Length: 267
Length: 340
Image (cartoon, each protein chain N blue to C red):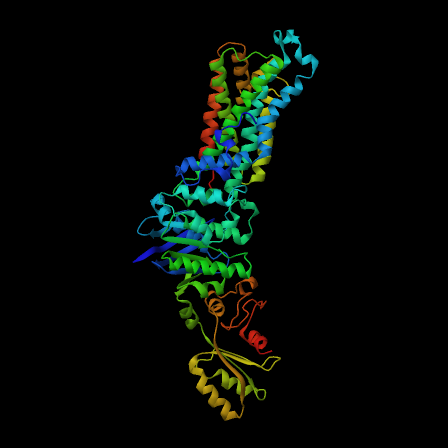
């Protein structure tokens, strides 16, 4: 929990300064942050699980040895970006859709519609929190990879950060689209699970994209996380990620974001 | 001047007119009830007032504003408690009050409000752990926190036990006494009769009557109930003569306990006494009571509310218990019970 997304995490509700007047959007964000920190399941899957996976893989001896088929890199080197993408998948596809659909299903959005603040403030806060948690988890993965297994920090840091931001946006937009299409929390969880498995595969959780057969890799790298995986891999190796990969992720983000905002049902 | 004006509002879902030309206006400072059977279009109507739905036709004005076009300004004037709405399960009462206070430009202090609603000892309880009555009290607090001029309460007491319901009624009267106009949606007769200054009865998307509770009762046929135990069973011709008395709507022949019931008007009393004297029958245990809003409601909507609606209501209007499991009560049945 070292990478808790906001500084409010150290403050318990009971000791919060009560009388100070906050802006409505700040109040919404603060409240949603507290609620987010009260979901131990989500916190585990987003913040702890990707790093735990990396740590476990590091215990497999062959994964720690340089492999000529991977251009002299180790499997563990490839699994740092994979674990980073896994954090995004957990946040955007596993944790977020049930929260947002429950807000709609249980009338929480409608309740807020009767106040001067639009219910989109609630959704925006939740999306931002899941994004922040995913990025925090990504930082944790990179740090643990470096400290625990000597995986080099990204050579092209700005390129890596850009690819990360695009990847997290794409996953959150996909999660948003699932919420927009699913009528119930149950449906959102079910559709989310399918998307979640597909995204895990294309992100390279089972076979890293760089180790996939040519034909499969060509298909996978036009998916949002397949392209993100390639971009992260290039940036990790010190090169500026190819604009083609970044473009694919950006295009998916734009399309899914548009679909989510157009199709979202408020009640 | 009316603070809420609803004029010819129509709302159609899947080809069905859920709200079919509803009009009414609510005066400042009153408790205005919207009463009707389930599915009559009550909630859809008030959702148009709250600006949550856009009417297909007709106009709604809240303090002269359009709740859809001027949604932002209307939300500052109008606090709402929604039917079947929840809060985030892990949000505490205090956090909910603080959050909703922060959403309004000039909120009231939530502490005295929480105190008034008996929430002070529940401030650190999470929403999911609150009882039904506590949740409803919290929703009343949230509806009032923006210091509104109007509150809309939709099926506020559904699912509450009788004591919590009565406590809630007291709160609603206090809200009105503090100068806030209340628009109350309900399907409980007793609630409407006890609280409302005026009631619009809605059935199948239309306003079928709009009056004060006593006005609604008066306009129903046979608004006065006369019951007595005749000294001997009346003959068939005598029953016909009873039915022919002025103002008589229905005659129920003596039941197992020997009680005969007439639904009639005040004008029936003197001719009844004369008739009984003429045929040599004495009336024992004569009772003259007003019908309840239940019966006025049945008359107006042509369909009964569910048994649940009638439970807890005493049709004679002044019974001491009021909570008896009367089921689908008729006046005769209830009088029997009272006499027993």
